[in-house]
Image 1 (cartoon, rainbow, N blue to C red):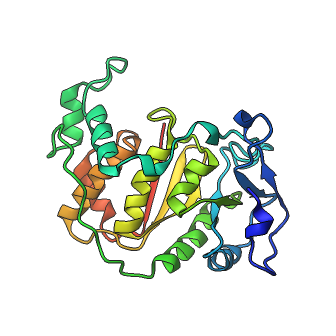
Image 2 (tube, rainbow, N blue to C red):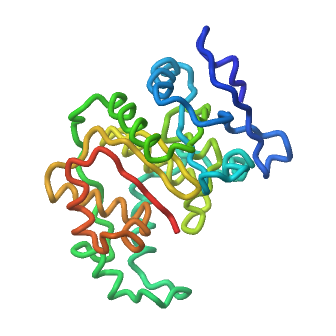
Amino acid sequence: MNLESRLPQGLVLPPGRMITSEEGHGTVQPLWLSDSPPRADLWPRLRADLATSGLWPLLLAPLEPHEADVRPWACGELSPERMSSPADHDPQTVLARWWQDHTTTDEDNDQRDTEKRLAVTAPFGQTWPGPAPAATPVKDVEATADQYAQTFLDRHPHARLGLVAAPRGADTLTTAGWNGPLNYDNDTATFSAVLRDWEDRFGARVVGVGFDTLHLSVAAPPHRPEDALRIAAGHFAFCPDNIWQGTHRDLATYAENLIDLNCWDFWWD
């Protein structure tokens, strides 16, 4: 990434460095990372200044708050070389495939038979219900991201600032070679394809990323229970551990929590 050539004139970054991926044989540098946590007011200024640069700011949380190598970021535990392109994947086809996988018994996992899986995802059964209708943002999309960035830094004070060159925010995960959902799909481009769709239909923005967590701002959350239930289905296909491992153990109760919620958080076990 030729970072300097993309920066707007006069923009000064805090101390940081380019990160080389472990799998890149010392030549692939998908990410710039700050040396220390950013000031709270830096995100909105950077987001606005970089709007036409092709660079996207991310708040990158380490696996452990005080670890020296800031996994997976500073140590280059990233795999951009083996990712495909988000443009190669249809988001609804991807979600339908994942939905089928998650609602069918896994021969290697006898803890959840098909009946238990279908109880979690009722009333939709094993057939992907399709996407919720697009919604109109109730707030400015970028201002919503700015507000959530402040909340994220309050919750994750050890997060670093990252910069990634990508066509759009959803693609930053693929460009950086993030491996968070590795246990479910080792091609992050499939997740970026879904995020592109959520950007367009719900005003979602990628704000924070952890070792195996993802944090989005959402400017057009669902207001009606029936829309929230369809969005919850998409979340389950995208990240089943949100429900399997979360406090809301079925789709209906999870959906209730999505109504008017301006952030979506995901965690893969």
